[in-house]
Every structure is written in structure tokens, then in C-alpha cells.
Image 1 (tube, one colour):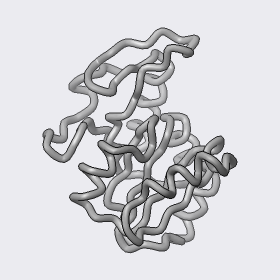
Image 2 (tube, rainbow, N blue to C red):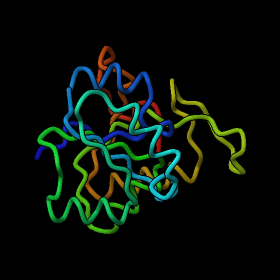
Image 3 (cartoon, rainbow, N blue to C red):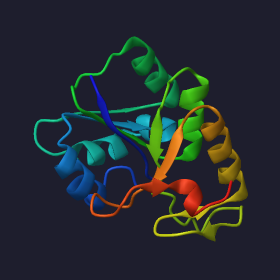
Length: 163
């Protein structure tokens, strides 16, 4: 098993992610990490339909992902892990998952958010609470990067957001 990409993306598996990162990396397994979606059969079905070819798909809670990580219980040899929210990443790490890096170019504007959001770049709407989570992740060994597509350079996230 090799995780090819750890990505934070509020829209999870969508056209841009699948047509850019998915096509270039050609993973044989996709794992979406989010408690609510893992429990919602209709959302799971839509995501599963989006997965290309014969790739395996699963949607799990952060707790289940931590267990998959600890037991090295991946189905694929090239896995793409997508966390819906920054809190999903934090919870998985708190529960024992070791995430060496995270492409964090998927913070979408949420008009229903009670917290003020600031736009720092494409798909980069960050709250002060998000900044605390980013700092915590970096303090726990997660290298945070920003790469919108395979055509853009990978850069340190803190080039855009000070946290």
C-alpha cells in the first residue's frame, strides 16, 4: 500500500479532483473520510459513482480511517485519501493516523458558517478556528501544502495563510 495523495476537499470527489489528481495519479482506491457522509447512503452512492474505472471506494469516519492506517488495511496499492473537513484530519491524527503531508487546497466558502471566513486563494476560505487546526497539524508532523491542480506548483500552505 502507498497513499499517493492526502487531500482536504470540502467537495470530496468532484470533477476537478478526479480529472486532475485522479487521472495523473491513477489510484486504485479512494477513501473519503467524514463521519456524516460515511453514515449517509445517498451521498456514499453518489461518490461511489464518481470513482473512475475499477478503483475501490470507501467512505469512513476519522476513527475508522485511523484504524485502517494503524492496521495497514488498505485495499489498493495506490490510495487517494480525501478528508472533507480539517476537523476530520485532526481527529484521525489524534486517533493515531500518521499523515506525513496534506494538500489543503479545498477549503470552500460556507455561507452558513457562524464563523467569519477570509479568502487566501483559490478554494482557500479559512476561519480563525481552521488556523488553530492547521497549526496543531503542523505541530504534529503534518506538512501542509497548497496545490489546486496537477498543473499548479505545490507550495507551502503558510505562504498563503499565516497560522
